[in-house]
Image (cartoon, rainbow, N blue to C red; front, top):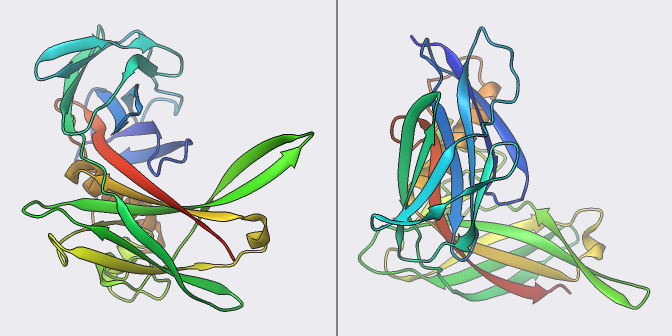
Length: 295
């Protein structure tokens, strides 16, 4: 078996504008480049470059400056990304839906790597309805129309919106909100009492496929717990992400890796990667939103 570690640093999807590190044990290879980029419709082109590191090395920040990072669309060079800091590279341009992009990364000390991804179209939310409420929970349903004749993947996120006014100025703050669901599309992954082993590995995974409703309008039910700060929220913001297959596979494998620590014995799990000659992820998404006023 090969034994080396790599650190993945990315502004992670779950798109909470935070950085997250994942250390995975593999085996005896020279370090390779790691590329991480989540490409959203209309989002700025932003890429993180790092490298794997060997078990014998000190566990330090492995992000890399000094790389050449290029973005292509249909074999046409769109530009070279500008180096920022901590391994981040940026291009003053935005991703567009229904286009396939390729990122090529070169560094004088490592073999070049590349990856392609397709940015999907956003899927409009038809409606979000507060179905019922009790003292501890609010129960919602979300409706949207799935596209026919294609395999599609989605993710739902929620944010509580707080509105404040100070010295005549209005401010808006958003807070990530957890939700739970026994809807068939999540296959038990968002229930705390899951008993199936696969469900336990995938606990907390918020992605799902259109396998059970392909080409139809679907209604997905979920509920939220009223936390101690619930009264601070004026609105609930519902975000429906239409993600591509690599995004879906990455999110699910990441959750499985994080959950396996709960098992005394666990199967080997590889973090999904679509980077050729290296590691990491380059995945696309498009988001639609709807805000509803809270009672």
